[in-house]
Length: 600
Image (cartoon, rainbow, N blue to C red):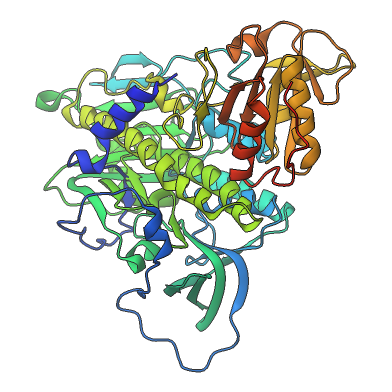
């Protein structure tokens, strides 16, 4: 686990205010040159509570004023701008908690490309919690091994990251390939099951906020629509209209000389058991020229090919891409038969100065964009949404509004950490280092990224173990009281706060607390053997829970946040009840407990 000191030091080294390479993700040029990047922007700063109390009144620049007479605003609790994976995960998180939200997407329909195709282990755990793990497993697959070719012969064969076996605490140890268009399809279906949906062709024209909410003007099918929301989320990508409307700088670098063609194609003359890569011969020996990766669950390949600095971009047509394949693999060896999507990327490394202002928040690429190396962009956006969703729902349900301040303070250091990793991988590839293809850094899996330094993380035990407040809550296998197989994730997933009790005194405390707010809290007692309990029983027959949570024999109560991170960890002593009630009230749970909870 990452210690608080190590996490703070890493964030200080990688955060934009500490260096000139803040994080960002490659963004598409969409077959036409995008806007020039912003210059000389102020350094990134964490959001202070006072900034939330004095929201901005600006409107989006260069937008025409709305007409004086309009229909009454459309009311909603949360307006989400952008229907990529970040916006869809946030929509699902809110919808399953009964929060009314409207998702507006400026494009006419869903995204159709493979762009972010790798789901890291932590993202897979989130998708299990959202109820889409079966679909993700059914339509995806493991990455194939790489086969590198040069001068007509195979010069390397192996994996970017060796495959690992699942363990009791980590059910998804490997990156899972799922084309981004399929991820979006699965999340939209889940959103529909929860009663939500996406409004396509709805472009944000302006936003204005006050102390009670946000008023946004959208253009939808040629008409202007006014939406009044309690909160607005910008999940609208690197060119975020929300971020621009707020005047928040996007610090970082755009490497115009680092361009990459990405396309989804159908191919004959090549098998699907390897990720085929071709490198350059002669003076450029070893330089990456072209790759064809079979996309799991489809009959297509993702084609990637760099465009050297100073070289004109080939036509992004089937014929133009066929020329690149012929140059790399040899004429007539491989035939492209269909082109379903294509784009041109420039390497971008950027991060927003702030992740929030007033009642408006930034998430995903709107807040940070990364190079594609390491497959972190989509995954970090999903984590943003997972962190923000339960907090928005809690505040809308009566929790203290300061809970929302923790979104920026928790996510900025994590985004900066990830930015540093992806930047290093990108630089290795540019320098053509021998190990540039390796992806065995455990931080890429995002399992050990946590929030130990957060105000929401309170480690109050006299002798804490290696798993501490702020860390991810591990999975573990066990049994229920009837002897049926049970997983810890099955008990802590579902959007609620979990009171995980080890020992009889902690069990009694958890039961009393949960009785005060049964809709918000679930008491789970970890037992050595089945027996009577007022809590949900988790019989730890093989001792995995105690080992994986590193709990000795003492009575310990762990409060697991709705997003699966340990929030509070304390010994079940005389002062435990008061401390637990105070902590839970800050999350919006157990506010009615009063003095009914008792210590052991």
